Image 1 (cartoon, rainbow, N blue to C red):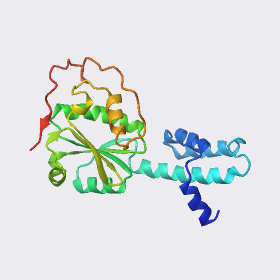
Image 2: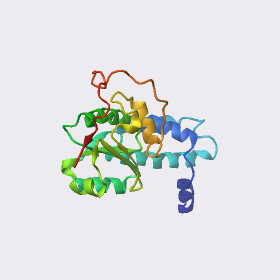
Image 3: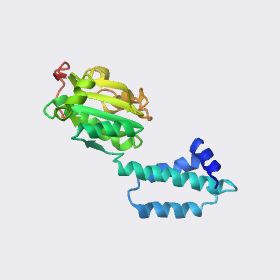
Image 4: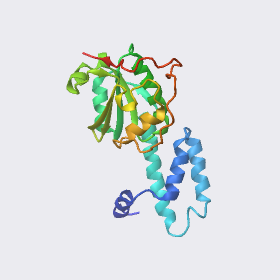
Length: 219
């Protein structure tokens, strides 16, 4: 395939059959499993029909390479970063990134962690990280972070949205993961949207929600 053809291929949207295969490959963690998937495709007449064979295989290989790179960069997981310089690197080199600025002793930060952990596993194209504000004095000042939890969305290195406390999540500790996922999707940092389910009566820790105005201020 010529360089011109490759550039054209990169500009084209992912083929429907290729995307279907990628969805399966996203859940695979073993390289042997991926090789078996390719072997099955080579024997799939529908997938390889006519002159689409070479184009689809080339596109799939490129997308699989991207998936492997994402796995190496911990996409699909929610990780804590202890160095604010690393946060700067991640937000400027990752297409879509969500950063949770937290304090380990703040209860609402722990609640936010629970939901972000769940969302990260199904929003594979977006990188999810968190950093303790005590380890990020420069970013706290630069981004004017005063209330925790604070979740900031970055696209192409630019801050496009922030969630401060639980005000945008129903101002309750018992908001659902779907509510947070829908809120994040509004900025485009994640692509999947879900209809929020009925609010639960208890908090994520199983206690009744008796105080809805306890966002923690950070000075």
